[in-house]
Image (cartoon, rainbow, N blue to C red):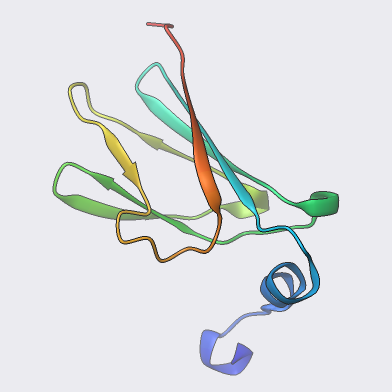
Amino acid sequence: MEEAAGRDLGWFFELYLRQEALPELRARVSRGKMRLRWKTPRRLPFPMPVPVQIGEDVHRLEMRRGRGAISIPEGLEPVIDPQHRVLKVEEIFAKSSDH
């Protein structure tokens, strides 16, 4: 499987097969930007990319070191993992009133 992916997937197997808890995806929207971060048991590394839909477009947000950010144009609402393909605890949204 790692050969097909072209990269080390040890982090994937460690979290999904050897841990009791699922990763939790946290999201915060502030000043036109959405920031995501993975919360994992024992702070295990988890660079799982996350699809984010903005308008009609779906973007693959890379989560290097378990964090990522994407700009959100005014008037559009982001949808995290619109096709529900990532096994996770539901994302927690926090909207800041910052302008």
